[in-house]
Image (cartoon, rainbow, N blue to C red; front, top):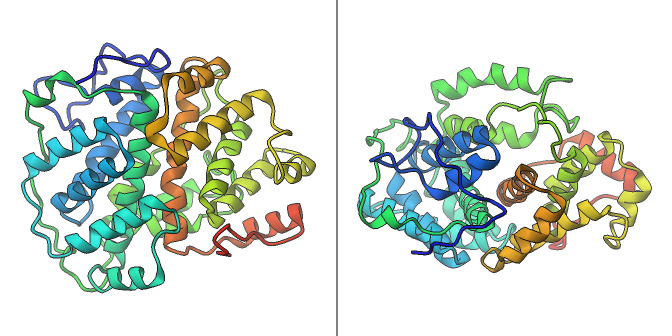
Length: 376
């Protein structure tokens, strides 16, 4: 167990109000929550709920998801995530789900590459998981890639108390949708539609891309509890927050690196809506020279965390914090990790791009987008 903690992301002393969402007993709070809390308490609370909901919500068994989590943490190379996921998996018990081999292969291939699931592999998974379960399976892998990069970026070390305490797992719930061969809409899914329509209405807070209800949301709503934990409520910008255009440059860089057609189109649409000049966007197709120094620092950090999360060092965090001090560095980090999730989710499911985003891209570059994998 290590003792070093990044000066860029120091730990808060505590974060009250987590009693229902933490997976711990004896008043223990994981270091990643405390590091997030020092930068943004609201984000830390949402993160605690997200971890619990993804691993123990939905309809897929927690033991299956934890087996995927341990494998993914080992493959990316995150001692912190390995320690936490192994502990939870041990407490949950062995996975006896007959679909485990398929789920582990799916997790491995999607982690290695945002377009890592071949058509044949997707068809094979579809033979064992109904549509809603397949969306959940994809969301779980995307979450693991988000979470592992987040803890690596925060520089947290396994806590000394992990070996001497037991986690507090939620009670197991048998969901009647778990065994259905077709995707049956749950009551929560049916009732969530109106809230989604209101959130994504033109001019609504958080609707900054100008594409109406995104197709990614239309897919995620099949797993409403995980979708709601992932999306949260739009938060108003904090004083001196990272400019929206800078965050979009970060997510654009990550999406280009992963070859995510859906997300590249969204980020270009968002940047245009933020007033970024077309000439700058065209220039960025060739190099980073058109980026402002702050934007370039964020993009450099984003690329390293995206490609080789286990190699991120304190020097990388310090370089980021030189341009984004305090909570601002956390905002950049979170944006990078968020798109480790989104890039894998949208293109794995081959979600169609919205017409608005397609048209904005064509207007900007005079052509359609084609990913490095040739995926349009």
